[in-house]
Amino acid sequence: MKVVLLTSLYFPNMPGGVERAVKTLAEALLARGHEPVVICTSTDGQTRRDVVDGVPVHYVALRNVYPLRPNERRHRLAKPIWHAIDTANIAMAGAVGELLDQERPDVLHTNNLAGFSALTWSAASSRRLPIVHTLHDYYLLCPRSTMFAGGRNCTRQHLGCVLYSWPRIKLSRHVDAVVGVSRFVVDRHASHGAFPRATAHVIGNACSAPPFGERDVHAAFRIGYLGRLEEAKGVEHLLKAVGRLGQPNWELIVGGRGTPEIEDRLRATHTDGRIHFLGHVNAAAFFAGIDLLVIPSLSNETFGMVAVEAFAAGVPVLASRRGGLPEVVEEGVTGGLFEPNSTEELRAKLEEFIAEPARAHAMRGRCLARARDFDPMTIAARYEAVYCQAMVSAGAKNLREKQGTARL
Image 1 (tube, rainbow, N blue to C red):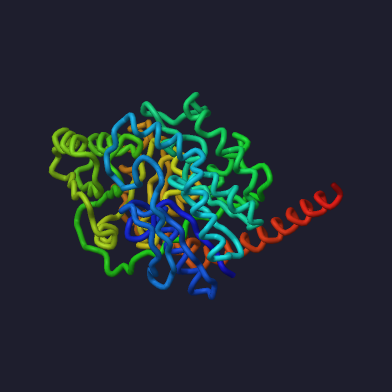
Image 2 (image 1 turned 120 degrees about the horizontal axis):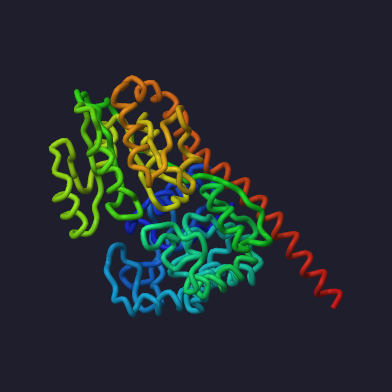
């Protein structure tokens, strides 16, 4: 089976978990005897073809007011123009159409659409290609893809979001199968009328964890945080919670970067010697050195790749009851859940683990077992089934259209 995987960015431009997950899936499909081909935007303005770890990759020059470059600041007036063009980018849809004609795949699997726009679906549909789309974020509902503003999750779309999202939702009628990385994100899109003709599925992201060796030996109970240092991730709530811990035998290891302003403020405000801000870290070394990972997200995370990475290292997870995180972390089995706005609840949960370190160790085997649910070959096999179903659905749809045309 030849599968074109379309995503905003790909190796070597991999700022987050989505890019890693798509690359892992592409390589797993290749290992299972399929022909994956990737289409992504280029960050240097050049259109070219390359082969990355055995997978052909088309890098397409982005036709918009600026290219997608992770962490690069943009003028505030340029952003709304970029998003307006990205609502239905005719030039990028045309470029994708030409590549689909060249590659002639059996199915198109779209992931992050930023840069290409949802008009890509129309280009594929006009070629009678089966279309599978994976929901990694809220791109179709929110131009920032987060549905998080003013320190809280959006319970409804703002007017600006409605204007941007309406054409995208209308175009989702072309999709034959929609996959959510959590049930939460599938239901959120369904509540806005997206994907009216698609079958719905839930498949978590493939996680190819690095090999983990022996765990570090340390006297204090080590709590870990790994992610961006920003408001939506809730890191300040975690810092406040550890500041109220009554037990002395703990350390907090913070891995990840934020803006210079945020980093400076956090370091200046939280000066306890047991708190260590490490900046960018090696994942294997980080997980080998902690006893418990905390994901204190305020935003409705769609999945939580870092939780799966922790499980692969045998590390239990305390996660907020937000978005898809409760679908990944099981209370009392692979960790625990808490209300992220309640510093007291998080503090109490941490106290329980610190007081009984053996509790985290006892969860190790169950964490390793949970990580196997996201093994790349397992995830690839599940996508194969969705691709086949989409091909059948698209074939039936095309037949109905032909019969309708014949009757006319």
